Image (cartoon, rainbow, N blue to C red; front, side, top):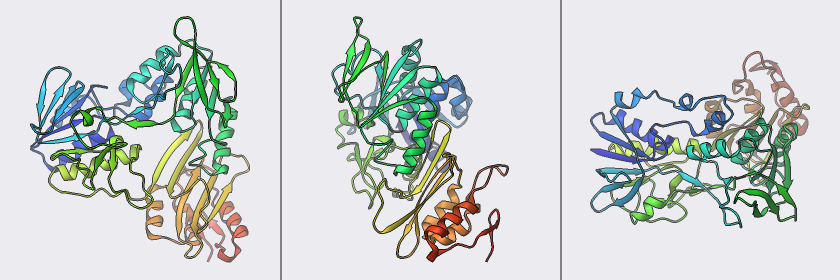
Length: 441
């Protein structure tokens, strides 16, 4: 079997490694125009900041690929002939395949504002985006970041660290208002304040204004302000990269439409990761999910199918993590921005404004349904087990020390969390802790 994978991100590489393990004799070719080797996309910001070099964010040494008989081709895939089972490359070469995986990822959404194509205006998703930002932000004084999601706060941190004055435009009334409850958003706002980031809430971009040389000089907002900016970062989301799929006649909607085996509308052609759209997502799931963890999971799942061991994709429990300046964030299960009437939502905060734990649980069964932690580290496997089993909240809190992943010398907060929970829910009181991980009966 010759497996061709278009894309060498986390999805494509996970698939390749899975197939190599399950089918040692398979020929596997990874094609990417972006880079010669796989790299860690979440680490791009640290290259910009000078904390890491590009070679430091490659998870595997360059010899790894030949050692594992994984052929790397740096070229753009420009055409797909599903009937002939071939892929046309920008080099003029044609690759024949037995199985094909499209792991083409996503591209930044640029919008259609007047001036969106000015020099100094860009998205931040790819390695070329990093190179462009490094060049275009050199020596600037003021910048505007449009959008308040994960990429937006990342751009703000990168620029502020270089001494650039940053203003963020956020259309919600709080940071990431569609995802985070108010208390979590307030902690992130404190980080923004501490790092001197100005945020204009309930404010959107109206136009980008040019200077005499065709470079952005300012932005005009829907509030009527004109904000000077020599660089503008567009952090208003990403969209699936569908160019190759459409050229090959695959069925697409927002993404490349796939079934539960991640197969597209054409035989022997599969899609996974940011570019894929589930035809029938499970209850409460989204059809297109552009997360690193999802990409890895889908890459492993489709790898089994391509290796002759069909495995339906199942989203499983929600998990994500991020870092907002100095504040680490983890979320497990379901924690909506607005409370669910069928659930209790217990929120503990430390007075210093740097630690928060939110626990959601059912009103009827008390089963835990979700967790947010900021400024704390918790074990993924432990929370996966508790959520999978529907463990009652009092039992979870009685054993909360088992989930704490902070170093031993860090201050522990379980006792205070339990005390506040008991005060808020005396009918479900939890025994008080004796020492970390152990509670009096």
